[in-house]
Amino acid sequence: MSENAYKKAGVDVEAGYESVRLIKDDVKKTAIEGVLGGIGGFGGLFELPKGYENPVLVSGTDGVGTKIKVAFLMDKHDTIGQDCVAMCVNDIACSGAKPLFFLDYLAIGKNVPEKVAKIVKGVADGCVKAGCALVGGETAEHPDLMPEDEYDLGGFSVGIVEKSKITDGEKASEGNVLIGIASSGVHSNGYSLVRSVFGLNKSDKKAAKILNTYSEELGKTIGEELLTPTRIYVKPLLKLIEEVGINTVSHITGGGFIENVPRMLPDGLKAVIRKGTWKILPIFDLMQKKAGIPERDMYNTFNMGLGMVVAVDADKADAAVKCLEDAGEKAYIIGTLEKGEKGVEIITENGVIK
Image (cartoon, rainbow, N blue to C red; front, side, top):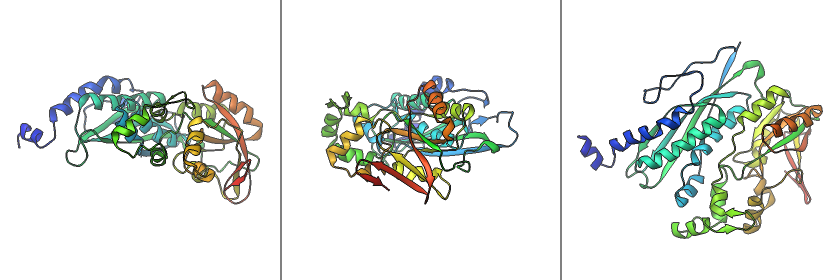
């Protein structure tokens, strides 16, 4: 089959070449020590850093979920890549690992080079924030499998940590203080519920109008709020681990507090978190009031304004908050670890959410 015939079948090889040309500079800016070769090879090469006695590789893979639908509706594609990177590298950092490199997979209905370049720019921006290299990826044109103006984005990252320094929760103990690190918004979880709350499952025209509606509570349009990229915590978290030390940590993603906080705990300990000790972002109050969402569902779906929860020794709590604030994060003392069945108790003015 000739190239022209392939184009008639729905795959534009020349558009693929143009996409690669447009993303080269963005990929280049992510290069760090250890990167071998350049873009265009069959495999991404990375030399392991020296200085580790017993290095352990930590990997993570994820996507952006249905948040990507908001990008379609707003025709804004330059931040969704950061979401993809964040979902992978934040998980890796929870083990105390430094992300080394990242690869993305973009499946798209029709390869429009300028759109691909915007998506990959977001990926590259995320890699720069995480301090890792974008060493490769794949853009696959899928005619007939998905609409021409839609795409899906996934990613994969690998990091490294000294085996003796892995953060696995074994050091967590009764009396540890819990510190919450502020989120930038909804991040990349719970968007099926978000879209339902705001009526974004209607026709694209109606949904676009809703997204462009200015909200007094938010101080911006609903679309601007919902497309705020996921915060990347790698550098401040690794700084905290190095300068102060932590005992365990949880990335608050899908499943909110109720599913994720217990994942950082050993048997025999529960996390007791007190509502009111941090600022719940307006977007969460708005959604809860708008749709009458039960409080447990809010804490079982969303991050409620905290993207990470860290446990430290009680006498290090103030130093930990200062370290995070010096790194540009907002941090709050939100609770403690106590003896009990592994789980989380969120204490509100109406009692305990379990």
